[in-house]
Image (cartoon, rainbow, N blue to C red; front, side, top):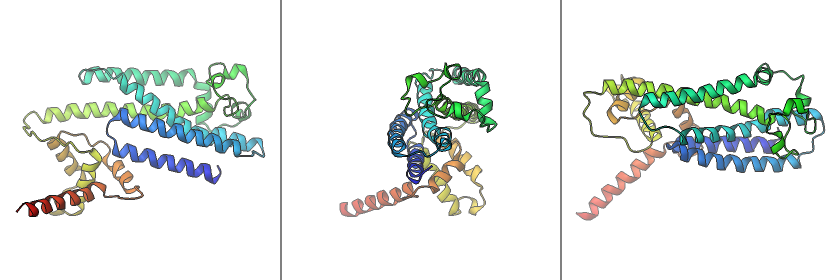
Length: 282
């Protein structure tokens, strides 16, 4: 991967991390992600045609290990968007049935493509010339692929199929997390039967996670003896919110290039303004 393509992928990952942190609405997040990825794929295509491949090995490297890292993200967000758009109204039981059906579709896709799936997962390369070189099309190998609908100057018989398998791996994790969240919500609702708080956290989940990490760092609870899980569980119950994988979210907050304490900085500015406005009103 040349330096420009490597930087393009790095920039895309950073942009996706940002919207995953800052946008709670899944549909809006997917729409923005799809737009970003499509723009990146177009840039990738331009860089690809400027690249002068000196060997078949370089072409295989691109279509096997570079392009799918971009297109798999596009497929992933497109699938998630469709899944969320068709999400049924109803209680947890109805939604769980729907999600389990979607997981069965993924399992079925892996089963139908088990030979290529095994080839990919075992790190095999003996068919790379057939799979990842343009113009090396074997009708028997590509009959069910995206190949015939795509720009064949920028596509091989199996780079899209590889990207789809990579995307399905991520979709499976997404759906399994969604199932766990439903079960967790049901347990939490049982424990909240006698909880009468009328306060609901309406800022972003990321903002609350940032705040709670800061408060724990300041030893603001139990003289610093409260552990992180205890704090998170309490605020989830109090504000009726599922903070999900908060440790992973904190890692993404740390990875911000600028304004790592965005919410806390905003609190300082808004509180200072309120004090200034109060002073002027006196």
